[in-house]
Image 1 (spheres, rainbow, N blue to C red):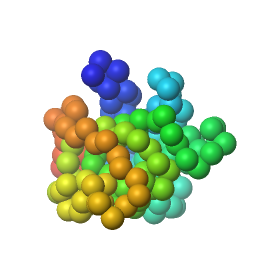
Image 2 (image 1 turned 180 degrees about the vertical axis):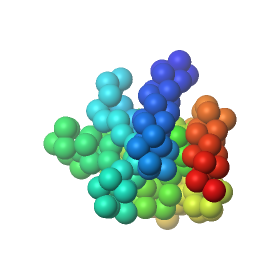
Image 3 (image 1 turned 45 degrees about the vertical axis):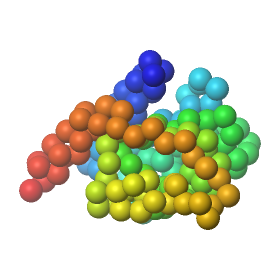
Image 4 (image 1 turned 60 degrees about the horizontal axis):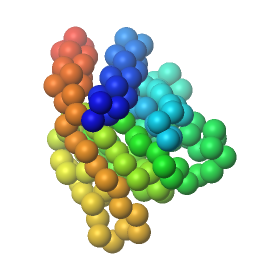
Length: 149
């Protein structure tokens, strides 16, 4: 749990930075055997890329650094429950553990809108730990959207 808190705080810092850059404030950190492989916030606007969610950015970086599209022995920390696209990438990358902060009632793919990460039909199971520093992540998102209304 202490490591989980540390790495989630890193993801929250990435979320805050992406929010300050005008992106939706979501951050992700990918850990391999206790070492940070990648950390990023959303970059969809900056990169003009609808797939540049924080999770996808760090998964790509991790695969590049490890020289393998399978990311065994990794943990993904993300500030918002992953969407269907990101859940699919987590499964394809064979990431064994996901820790996320707050649920996404409009598109979460663990339990809120879809149950992709728990589907018995898939050939990979992901250990999911939801709710770590959920209030902090929710506050970032709520503040971001309140300022734009």
